[in-house]
Image 1: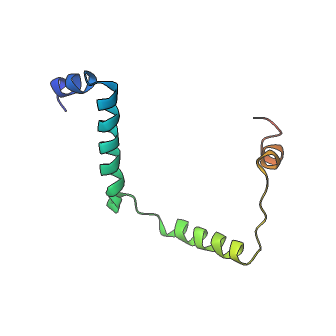
Image 2: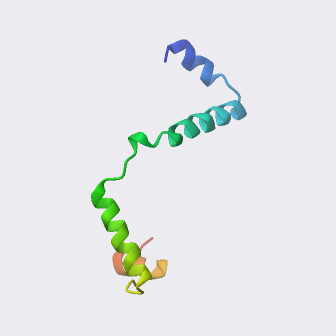
Length: 74
């Protein structure tokens, strides 16, 4: 990107900047080739979903999580 292009972008209205960001985000999110999930993460996710399906998972309320792991702070 040249300095001139950057200057032009910065001179856009707020609405035009938002539209540009949305267009860029749509382009980035449509390109899934660079965002592959590591196999070990897939395995952990499958195991977690299996435990949930079998009723072997326990869920905590947010205040319980803060108390247990955040010493009640936050």
